[in-house]
Image (cartoon, rainbow, N blue to C red; front, top):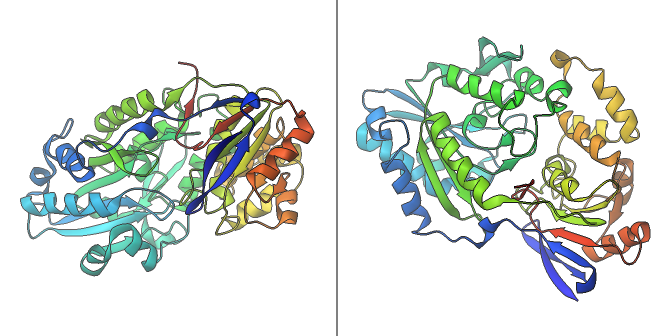
Length: 424
């Protein structure tokens, strides 16, 4: 019997699988990496050696109003490390610069002060100007025309009115944008509701190029890049993280060049060939990405790549904050996967419902695969989502074996978000 720890909330749950039935444990090699040198030194080295731009301290000279875009409470960006170093770099070139830290929320709720203190540290919260993007407040946004897809482009006016625009984030495989990081800080990060909705429309999500690890011809990625260029992102700092959320790589400089360097690194260490199993067990990597069901398709899409034509998927997602969005909650429970997909497919891009991309992806996966969910949601809610509730990974495995047989081959992906399961 093999015991496998699965990230879950702020801790983990154990899964027990007989070795003769365990086909594979699929893990990114990034989990093996440790900070070398220290996390702080990796970031310092990136800032001192930017790709395709001058140093941030040089860019900051003569700039009165600087905006630094960072991620919200749903992302694991190590801002306690990165923000102080970026601010130090800015002020070494311009001690009098007025800096605004703009939290990129996308369509998420506003980040609370308690969460900001946990993410940034007390010194940043007490001494810096921090603003949360609110996609649902139209007064925050400037109209910047349309994007290549025809989508409207409305972005937080702080980004359009500043002298220097900087973004920080982290890079990992993303199941419809190809990879996170870089341009994603702007779109969806600090855009208005209508812009985010159009970027995440049924038609965009349904593109054969809107896939994990795919950037070329990806319409979602292409709109994101144009949006970030149009508002004049002058400098980015992006990092890669291991399983312990430690910085193992950092890249700074040009929006596309620095991001491409980080993507190349992440692809090298996270890509692995998919291993097909009758039952595929995965997680969203624990907190913060498993705090609600809305975030969970990230890992489920990885499991889909290993589940063959009709494999059962087991998802362990704590859902500490519940479903994660009222629109998602309504749509995911409106009918069968087929009914959900038909309904969403008829919605024009400019009338996209917030969060509809999530039930769209679930509908696609649930059309082929039974799914067992280990979470803190009540059982009836899980059933209304066309999933099977379970209290523990072992109970979920027992349920899956009732469907696929006692000799079913089991594939375990402990962190489905970090793995790029594509043929090499």
